[in-house]
Length: 635
Ligand SMILES: [Fe+2]
Image 1: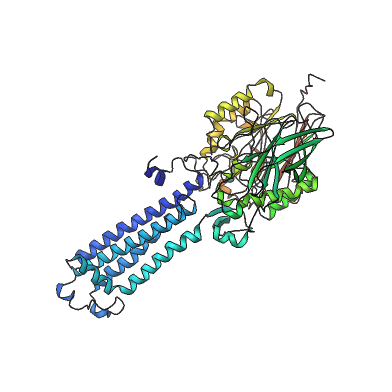
Image 2: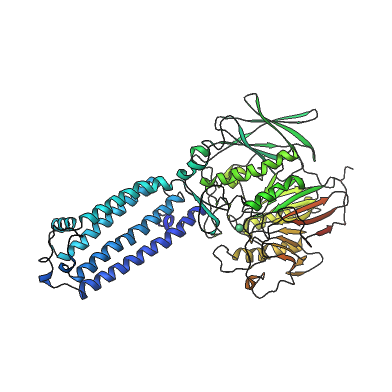
């Protein structure tokens, strides 16, 4: 990778870096434009408004400051040149300094290097300014030019020098470890479009000294690997003094002791956010069984919790999944969380845009807000409710800049990978962060869930498609009812093709590569998100109604600000009417969540949608009867 690649093309960068680059590119182009204008204006002034010789030096006493010189003593051309130089100095230097700050805010360069570069840039600007201004008096001697300019501009230069020094020191301090997240109104300075901005400095006023205090376990939550009736990941955030952790898992007389893996946590996160993250991978469990789990460090039980495994295939036990997407720490998001204990699901599925941290490790607190909110519900049902996630545009970066590569690493996260393992290794161990991927399956009772990546880390085809085909062609999965969840809808309720926020190429790719598989393998449903509205389609096959088709549920409005759709955009493809595709749609104020209930005894799957206060949404119900019930061979 060349330096140019790094600063301009962003190859090999994470999404938050690429966003900084988008800002920096605009700013650099703006500065270059100003520079060109400056040169053109200077040339025009030099040739067209060239002062007469006798009015140049003779009438201005160079020991007078810029402010002392009486207007009538200065030729008009001198005033124009001086004004252009002073104003354009700031119009060039300030945007370039802002570009550097953008790099610093998104942690592409160290903030102190940013300060040093701003200092150099400012000094260079002052140097050029004095040189060009003094040139006006046509002094041939280099020294004399600067002496004259320094005397003449002494107050202006002193002001500029102080400003440059101030920004070189203030900006690195103020913008260190910047976080730009969305829909996290608890902390951060509110900016446009529900974006909140914070830095290490501002967070020191809001967050406690230790977000995860020493000596305690501050978060305990579960995530699922493939075989959900036998396995689970119990994830724990502990104070930084807790160096090792064990899980003792008990059911009646059965007892399993499992050492938990310490997961690398980014060291560049500020001290108040530091913690030790552990994942305990529990295997060999019995299906639909409530286990007691003691979390032990140095022979001391630090916390006790419970977890119930998921029902296995062909059992009579039911399965309940609460699902939606685009959850935010906002009034309606928190209202939906309050309904979790009433629904009492076996799992919570969020199809992307989970905490809106934008893949920036310094927005770590948005995950603390998410986990704290959901953990409050675990207390009401006296057990952990596992998460299932698919990846959204705000989980690995600021937006779907799919042209950038994303590097997943121990140090840079994104924390989506650090915190939420969803797949084990082929050796039955926890996968290292850099090997974690964004497409996974979970077998749950009679259901097979495909969590897919809408083109953020992996394109829709290639590796991801090969992996899908390998699962779909595997006979051991053939009798399961298939579902997919992913972020960008294939049938969106609002088609805003040129929107800044959306790259609808993702949609077309999914329609091209995934829909033929959904059709061929008769997927029962697909859970779509990202558009922040509500919909349920008819069963669809080959883009039209079909009895054995796939129903698309969506569109990700789990409590964040619902986006109202303008009339022209109410189409799933330009010119295509709603009626043929959607059975029920709400395009305004559409906050909701879905509940899937799969009844083990009669092999029926039922879907219902609810508003944040748990009011049933009319016409949302959809029921599927899987007639070919099969029985376990060992029964
Ligand atoms: Fe999204």
